[in-house]
Structures are given as structure tokens and as C-alpha cells.
Length: 212
Image 1 (cartoon, rainbow, N blue to C red):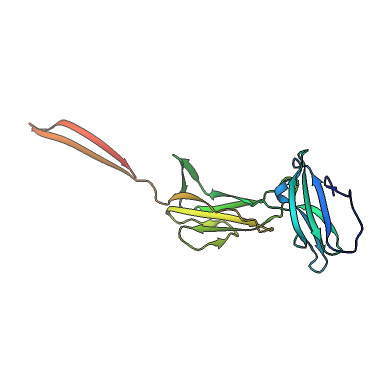
Image 2 (tube, rainbow, N blue to C red; image 1 turned 180 degrees about the vertical axis):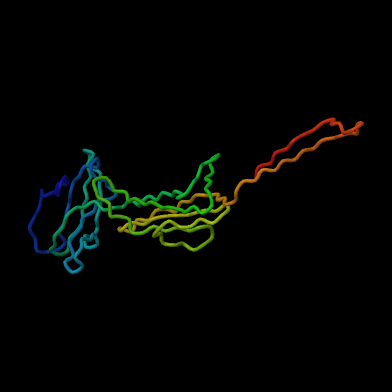
């Protein structure tokens, strides 16, 4: 089984169950937390570790690991690296946006985009992303299928994903500020005047510009 090594020393033929299975492997190549012994279920047409009882994982003196278990019926069996790593989801904005002082700002009419990628355990393969979910503000959690509209104002978006092996990502979130209003500029002049023959004089003046 690849770089797994089956232990056969002391093997004695017996018709009585259980049969003890043991495999040694290098943790530099395979994640010990993801290794288990599997048997093939011909009725379900899939591999499962449920039929291999009392599975144990032991660290050996040479730094390798031994995975062991009991098999109670004749079956195809093999050590496998199960996907135990949850996917990771990233949020982005479809529309003009900028990060100012650690805060995300976007123009009105922008949409939220989620991108999920499953992670593979060491020595194993990805099971694939099964679904991605999001929640805007206090709204209901919704399955992500396409970019979603972001309402104007400050809002929070929570999101997470799950893979085909039921590994669930912890929900993460981002706060977004959306502004659909055009900026306005106001000019205010404050000055003191006094009358002069044929006109007025100005003692002082201040000008205030306000951008909103």
C-alpha cells in the first residue's frame, strides 16, 4: 500500500476471528491523525473504517507510527489517508472597493463573492468542497451559488464551507461599508464687514469647506 508496510511477523493462520491488522508508516509522508485501516463494503460500494474495530495508533521508537485494528470477517482491506482537513473560504467584492484604516469600503451596487478551496491532508487527497454558506447581517444562512447583493450601509457577512467528507470550516466574517451616495461639497463663508462711503469693508473672513 504505497509507503505503508504491513507487519507479518508472528502471523498464525486461524479460522477464529478477529484477525489483527497492523501497518507501519512514516509521519513525514502521511498525517497520523488522518490514517486509518479501511475495508471495502460491496453492498454500499465504498470503503469504510467502521468494520475495523479497536483501531489504535502508536508512535514507535524509530519515529514511525503503527496503525492497528481487528478484522472480524474476510474482506479487502487497506490503510488509507482520510481527508480530515476542512476547506477554507475567502470573501471578496465585485465592484470598486478599498481598505482604509483596516476597514473595507465598497461602492453601492457591489456584490459579495465567495471562493472556497478544500485542503488535502499530508499524503492524502482532497475530498472536494460540498457546499459554501453565508449570512448577511442577522439574516438567514443561505447556500452560496453566485455573487450576492450587498445592501447600502455598514454590514457584516459571515461565511463557511464544508467538504465531501463532512469536515466543517469554522464560520468567519468580514465587515463591509457600502456607500451609494455621491459626495457633496458645501462652502461656508463667515466674515465681518463695516460700512464705508460708497461701499463696505471686511475686517476678517473664514472659509469652511465640508465634504460629505
